Image 1 (tube, helix red, strand yellow):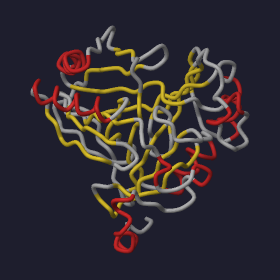
Image 2 (cartoon, one colour):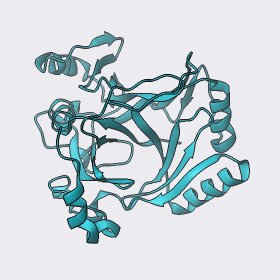
Image 3 (spheres, helix red, strand yellow):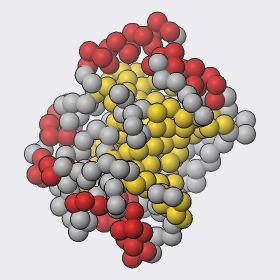
Length: 295
C-alpha cells in the first residue's frame, strides 16, 4: 500500500495562512522553519498533532508573490479526508467562518485566501487516535484525518501515467492512481502549450511516503537506470528526499517516514518557535537577519 507524505505550496500572507489552516481547518502548526533552498523564505508545516507523514500540508512564505498562471503543467487541489459522520459539522463550521463552499455527495469544495482548491471528503474511517488529535475546539471525532487526493495536470497524461507505472508499478485507471483504500491522485490533461508560472497558491511539489532510506536509495538507482529526470537526493533533516521531474514537468518528491519533526523541538511544543534542523543551526543568526520581511 502506498500513501501521501505531504504537499507543498506557496503563499503570500503567513498570518492569513496560519489562521486558515489552524483556526478554520484545525490542523496543528507543527513546524516554523526555512526553505532549505532559499533561507530568506519561511517554511510552515501543518498536520495532525504529531505531524504524521500523510497528514502534512506545507507552505513556502513569499511576500509580494504574484498571481499564478496554471497553463501547460501544474499540481492542484488539497484533498483532505474526514472521519465518518462529520460532513454536517464541517458544513456548519465553514458557514460560521463565512467560507463559501459547494457540496457534492460526501464532499465540500472551497478555497483558501490564495485560491487553493480544497476538498473535504467524508470517509468511512474512524476518528484520529488520541495521540494524533489536535487540542482545539474541533471535536476529536470530527478532526481532519490527513491527505486524501490531489491532481497532476499535464499536456500528455499518457507519458505521466507511464512514468508512474514503469517507475513504481502504479497503474492509472480512469485518470486516477489509487494509493490505498481511500487515497488517490488524478492525472488530467491541459489544453495550453504556454508555460505555467508559479504564484500565490501554486503547488511546488507533491510528496509520496517511502518507508526508509534503504528504499529511497533503491528508488534513486531505479530512476537512474530507467533514465528519469532526477533533480536531487537530499536530507531535509526531518526526512530524506528524492526529487524527480515527471515527464509532464511537475516536481514529484519521495520522502522517508523518519526521523520526523521532533529532531529540533519536543513533541509538546512543535511549532511554538522558529527552528532549524541541526545542519542549519549554526547559521541561525545570519538566517534570521536575512528573512523576507512581511508584506
